[in-house]
Length: 356
Image (cartoon, rainbow, N blue to C red):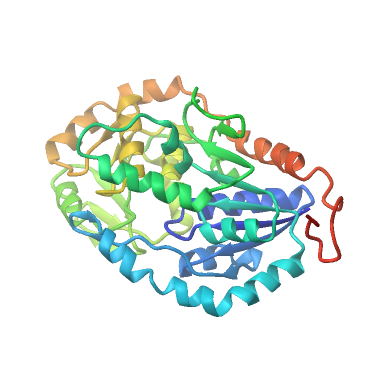
């Protein structure tokens, strides 16, 4: 089966998952064409020779997500698609796709509908369509996140929703699954060492100043910075990251879904620092706190971190009772691909696209 796989280049969670999923699909005998955007995503996925497109990047100010900057600075996407739409469509037609997968990447969604091929949406953001509205104070960011999710994934034949729990309100074509865990993480034998892993999507100088007041060792991954500042050591993303993740006694990080999944799988207590005004991160942080796996706060104090570090045994006990199936997402995807396209050649025209 020929599969087009569109991957969001905002952050690296979808990208690392795509490396795992695309490799898995290739091992199963499928041919995968990857679409993505952003320098880090294109470089990380270079083994799959990705087609570079344009996509939405999020922009932040100290007070949180800036909607104005995000809208104005992404206007360049429109000229790109005006110039390259016919080239991209021709490239996709020549690939003769049987199905499309979108990992929160809207061009793939549009292309699947344009070429009239089945689409599978695979992300955790669709969970936001099946939760209760949040308490006061998050209403606008919640509605914005829901709107963005509907735009990115509309009209899919099936939705694979990565989540840490089931939903009773989901429709028959919505499948809640445990998130995939990379094989590199599955092979680890975790231990609890002396250091705390800190992973920041955006620089947070206020948090760093708090860390420097604590009698702990912190390994910080943020924007590939390197060097030492007292008890804080900055490291580039690379070979040391998995080792530091495996051996850390706890994690302090922004609340991206993929790292939370890895932390739960490895039984690592987590102090979440959600990016402000980004409701998905707020939702993930509240899950950590409410599940007893750690704490969360947008503004971190020394007292809060001391309390968190003093309760690590309690969080580890809660984590020990939680089971996460690391391969459920892969099994579900294979089953749905067979369902939406049981015979890739049936009903195909000369260009490999379904004749309607």
